[in-house]
Length: 178
Image (cartoon, rainbow, N blue to C red; front, side, top):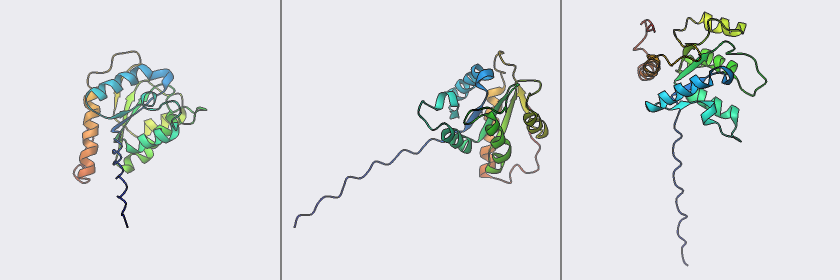
């Protein structure tokens, strides 16, 4: 009785490249700055998620954003005047802010604040960003990217990576002032 050949092996699926940095921003207030930041980080070889670049027509918007939030080691918050505002969209900076501040640090990531306004319209944003004593880099919309910004984000990414490998290594040390 003839034997049949085994079915051809399926090619291994390439591993999904995880996001290192998630850029959270309001399209109406910081799109140009988010694009400049994205391009700068990508030029340094840092895998960066930006909704405008990474979500295509027909994609599961909420699913893609949630996966990128979970994967990211650093959540960059371009906190403009209406950052964190309630919207009618499926997903908004409100959810991104809440995840970065509440869930992110517990999961080994860290928020990185770029303060693009003197104050925020949303009371919840004022409380969330004001009470967390986050270090920040100021960047006024329409101005060139601060020279130190890419280095500071890389430094934050390195600190998260060290903490992931050696969780007790950084205990008791103060945060680096920006």
